[in-house]
Image 1: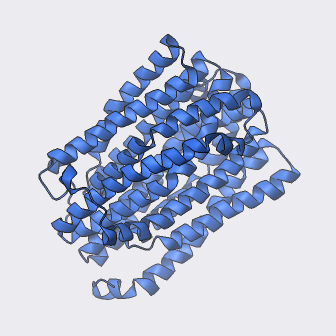
Image 2: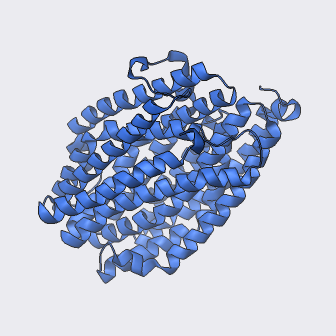
Image 3: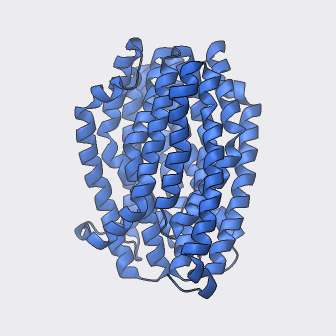
Length: 454
């Protein structure tokens, strides 16, 4: 594993951030492609109702796991900082705390959500002819939450050390199994949405087990020993302080998407299916954006721990440029190939047309997300997670919710609804720019002036 670790504290920056970000982006994209296989398989071999049922689960699932994904980001930052300080003892304690939190949280979350599963989905305005299929998928997926969260936290451990290749290898291996299981469960066993949910849970278990195994075999500070699993109060508090705002941001962000999804659901199954197909394609760009944002966070976290202010600033400039180049280029490529890509999910012309409309509104505005992800990631690397969280909650979620209950209510069309996305991103990017100036010169002025930790 050590040969895959990246030295973030010395040498050039650009090549190392790419070496970190590209496998991380590929991991997210592969994960999404394998998730999209769920929709593609049921869309092709079951029908539009099953496709809409699986797609309608995405926002609520994102809401449920967002809090703990945020805390895994906190684990990433904390472990990266201790790594920069060369504090092997605290690295080990943080690793075992993170893995313990993932499993315990996953079990509790699964039990609570299973109990309220029907009530949760009823709040989504899912049409009656789709609801039963949505509920079946949802309940099976919830059963896999412990291993899903374990994968996220274990991946965070690897990222904190500069290793994004190992999670990619594990995900690719399990993802191939996911696709094969999808086809077997749906085509051979005729399990419909239950089959694709089972395939997702089983393949995620495999990838999680592989990551834990590699940590067990590691001989460094991140070595996993089941006997050392613990909940270190101080370390957990640090993870929560950094990760909780990010997690709450993700939850509110997902909540705004649920409100939009509920509005989409009212427009009919063609709109639902087209929007779900487009989301599963355009989200590829999000994983690129997110990868460079996480790269900025991790590199800044280590260099902040090592007290290297000039390098922290260079990381900001480099990741911003790299993110813009890759995200915009992929967005344009997806737009050019929009119809063939959408037809892979469902050949219905109406479904494809709605998908094209959504992609145009979303992908042409991704440049705003470049600013959002990098500035948010930079501030989190220093431990300032609350500032970007509050701005994103107000700028993204606030604008979208207000839009749905005012502008969209007055004119209930799909294009009017989707317009909330670019508007919310533009406002948030501008606000984060002002927040960056405040944190850089007010909160971190001493660090950048003297090179000492504040």
